[in-house]
Length: 147
Image 1 (cartoon, rainbow, N blue to C red):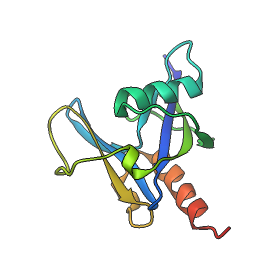
Image 2: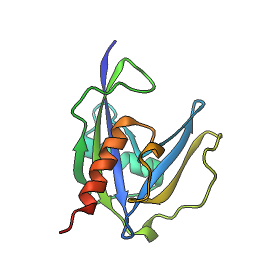
Image 3: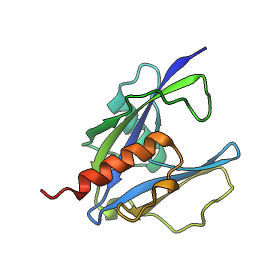
């Protein structure tokens, strides 16, 4: 059965132009993505974003700005019967509000870890999923514009 799979992700940027990445190992696969995940039935997009950030990062957010949604067919990497619709929100957060610890990449134990990476030094191929790559390119272009 073909179905839509709604996803919501946070592009969390700090005052040093670093972006927060989530490295995850699930069901034998290692991947790097932005924090976030699936929208549950009966849940709004903003509520899903808040829930995902609370679950993954133990982070409570007040303000998030809509940034991007994919406008093309993207099949799920995990279930090819699903068509993904991914919403991205921009969040500005002071680095001292979310700290990370160093770790080796890739790791092979189930779970997730986060790290700050310079927005302008991150190589595109370090992101696993196609829609993340597009959202990231748009963010980098947006952040590079002079005001």
